[in-house]
Image 1 (spheres, helix red, strand yellow):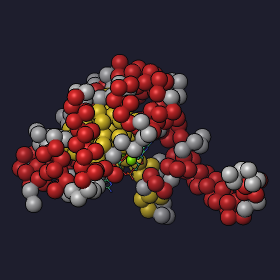
Image 2 (cartoon, rainbow, N blue to C red):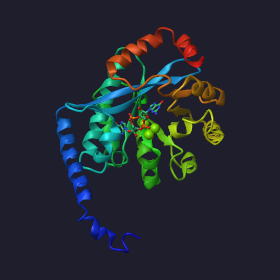
Image 3 (spheres, rainbow, N blue to C red):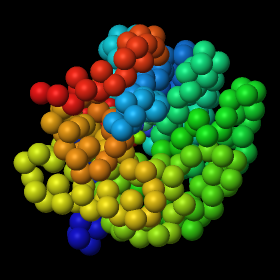
Image 4 (tube, helix red, strand yellow):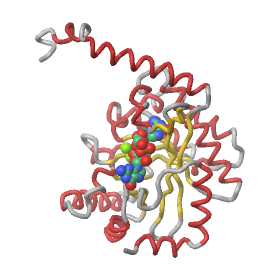
Length: 291
Ligand code: C2E
Ligand code: MG
Ligand code: MG
Ligand code: MG
């Protein structure tokens, strides 16, 4: 409607919009420098199997260690990166660094799955499977099953068949694929049928109010039920309290990730946290599931 009224033409003279665009361009320039200056870091958030008490892996989450502004979360810079000429180079850096860390853990005797968030554009670059294979080959001995690709549910949407082909090619090499933020898309149920997926991650927006919203609880129960029927593991993200974890276990969702277990951490504190957990996994888990 704005278009009908000539709204688009007006926008280019809007001074606040112009300032906004200038700020974005400036931020993008800074982000390019940040990549060459090694200012990005990955933090790792553990994922727990509540049946075994084992930490099965960790999700790699990008942070920007800004020289003046401190540690910045993806919400503060990823929107500017997305769709820009930095999206693929930054996505590649994330994959490379996550594989390096995964290999370091593997060589130290920690058989952890590292989950990597892959943007839609990056997944759909024609050489993505080949790129992934090359990154793995840098680390001889590291099994491809230790790398999980997290694909946003919304990515799969644009071109489900094309996405399915890329995902299939990656899975054929042994990589695992998780469907991230499940339930937030327009036709979530269709992906159960059409996408070859190893793990479903229930979006935190459904998990957050699980205890007091019976609709959200019904949705989570249904996704868990459906995942079981399709023989696929399901993980709940955004598990903030012990009560959430308990309820999820009772619903039959055995994999969890969230502040209630641990916040995302840099590799060094992650290692300390993991050592502490591994000393007495069932005891740690029992403590978490209590009170
Ligand atoms: P996501 O992949 O769904 O990751 C989960 C987000 O929820 C993370 O936010 C995590 O810190 C946060 N979280 C975990 N547990 C809890 C909890 O109990 N409560 C609450 N309220 N939040 C929790 P983060 O790190 O800010 O990342 C936000 C999003 O940015 C991610 O959502 C992902 O879509 C994107 N992202 C992060 N790192 C990367 C990356 O390396 N590449 C790409 N393409 N996207 C990334
Ligand atoms: Mg994710
Ligand atoms: Mg998610
Ligand atoms: Mg998300």
